Image 1 (cartoon, rainbow, N blue to C red):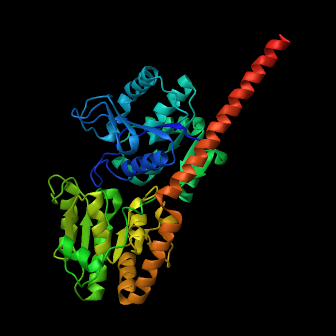
Image 2: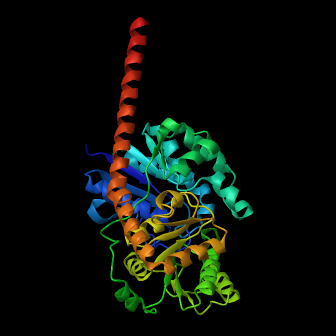
Image 3: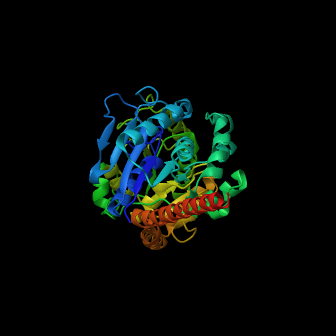
Length: 430
């Protein structure tokens, strides 16, 4: 049955460019979930904060998906850590929008804790059920980042409320589910595990040598790729040190490509993390082997995945991690941190290797193992692609979400019917 779904993503627009600050997996998640819900016949509107005065208030995206740029706070980019103060405006706008458009949504899918706050308030006022994908949990983030976590402490209180009031919570991997129960005392019966995914239309195996020609790197040497947001918690520094350990053991030529940043050309001024990472590469004596590539479009990153032999992703923590799955879809084994969603998507010893996030020697040793045994690298490449297609396509992900929506909507209708019957019974007895 076609449903009317509202997706809230306060700081991560589906139009966001990946790789920059506050532009990452959530942007992609929202865009792909909306697109595939629409393919299933649902009507979808996405609500995100207007961060550019040139943006129209209401836009129509591909396939008729509505994008509402909510005027909440200044119409400019603001760090997500500073957005909480504008959430009352966001909620008030959505209430007025629903009234003016005469739209009754069957369900709200909130993304991130501030969107969850808006959804919880709308549920109280309009009695619309909501589900939430947190994408990251405040208490887990604080545990790993300490003083570097700039979100206000009120986040913990808000997340407690959301966990208590959400009709269902989407856990992206077993670790996410465990954290919800351990840190938030979430009801396990109201947690549904649904991973993130990749789009087979985007990520297909390309010829490696042609891909290397296109991006202009050496064609016939071991090539390691790291791709994503360039922020300290992504652990790119450990990946570089691990690559250096491999190079010293390999004693032959090799190259590491690092994709991400705030500009198309790598710029340490616009992306300070690049400067820090360049310094680390120089300290390790491999500055000539580490190539910073800058930010790339969705179309371009497929070529970078294809040009690589191995993908490395070693964050401190990762609620899910979409890039390892995308690498696997392109037939690349992954050397990844044994954290969060990575230890779920990557099968240690079969589709790649899992290592401690802070152990460069372990990273280097696994890279050496792969390049010293090319037949094993090839087998892992094939297994990686098979696993990605079997479990992690966006179509399969959204089909799971759609079934969960139906259960939530049905339970809500049953509950309303029960309360009406009870009220009628009480009236008769009176």
